[in-house]
Amino acid sequence: MFISTLLSLSLLLSPTIVASSAASGAAMDKKGFAPSLYQGEWYDEKWESTRKCIMWRESRFNYRAANRVSSARGAYQFLDKSWRVPLTHMLITEHKDRKKEVKALREKSIHKWNRYWQDAAFYTVWRHGKGAKHWYYSGSLGC
Image (cartoon, rainbow, N blue to C red):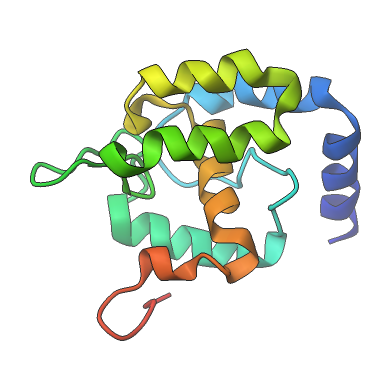
């Protein structure tokens, strides 16, 4: 927990670390579960097990997942038609130093965003549990 807190603080203080996380080889790996590369403002280690559960239920840990029936895309199955542009607006507020890169995400379907940006989108919408309703299933979150 202490190390995670230190890492979170260092990421908030160092845009270089965030930039390297978003552009790393790990960010390009789009299959399987791994600890979140996003460690920004909305990240809290206590939500990692919930994120894992949601990710399994939504995409079986596949960042490239694309629903055949709807526009749901990516590891967290955001509706691409409804969420892509609004997500970039939310992400820009925290990633002001990477505005151009975040705006470029508007041109890519969510399932083509790398692991870092999909995790950042999840935690930004999740907002320490306040956004849980976006993954609400018939009476219960299920996670």
